[in-house]
Length: 287
Image (cartoon, rainbow, N blue to C red; front, top):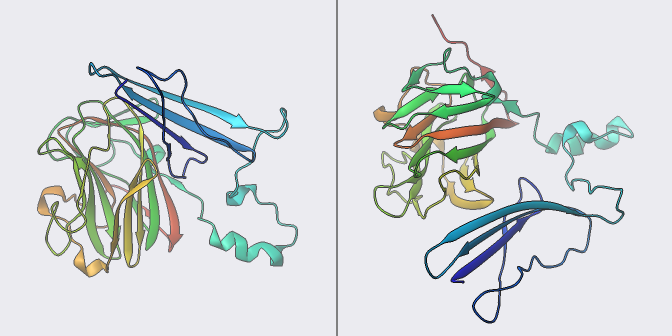
């Protein structure tokens, strides 16, 4: 055994936590996940590499329960799970939670939206083409502040995934895993006219062919963050007047979100938006 990496996650929006592994001899007989002192769901990922170069990965899920017949409950309830005992006593708590999420994947139809390249949708999943500059305009204009959550799967050796965002009246792109060389590059584009290579650039490979990953972009009035599989890779503070969108990635509607693929097919399993402040708007394609 050359390496053994073990991670776990206790909520779908929580971070992946690494558990260091130690063993004697050529290979371990088991992997350690640590101890849990309360009822909780557990998702785990195991990645291994042998000295001869062979690799394998294992994903799994189980629950730690206090009683066998009682499944664990989430620590932070979504608004639809909160049953107020008294309206005036719970209003403040509910207001602090995200508003109901918008299912952008469900409302998207490649035959009805503007596209560059051949985008397809089947069985509730969207697939973008392997070409340079492929784009699909989503039928939605976001509110002032929001969180965009995607579950994506590269169907080829991973290259650029582009998400077209909006902050105030400015559109910009978040770029993930663009690979001009061996290591992937990710960044907010454009900041003061500079694309990848600016101060937000993160270097490191984020995706693996055939493996799903969770991608989150959070847009606040003076802050933008990018995260993949629970790890924040970009945390930028600044105002919207520093942001712009290059001509290469533009789409017809200046207010719409969009998706982009660069030399890699991506399958989209989830595209949802959670409004934080303000109200978004569904867009209708003009004839």
